[in-house]
Length: 151
Picture (tube, rainbow, N blue to C red):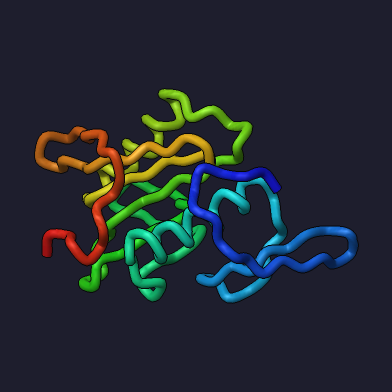
């Protein structure tokens, strides 16, 4: 698979019926290794190993709704109290992160009352802090380390 703009991680990969599968440490099972899944698995490792988000507070491909807003998110990280800390949208490398992609996930994020948002295609990463009072997002260099979050 293609080298992504993440640190290198060791993945468990197996081949069955001439198809590659990758072990998902959150879902605890092998998942068909598609280009988007390759990005998602790197992103998961980044969140856990680099940003110190506890794996127990992460869910993958989670449907969530708040009021009239419904969405299915690639990765959601929660605060210990169950509120949403971070929403992540993963795209395959060949999918450009344009304004329409970003605006769609940002609208969900503003309605979810979460703190942070990440959109990635594995090569380009965009990080935002959500300002729920002003209904806007502020771009960041990186999501802060989870251990340093405001409680």
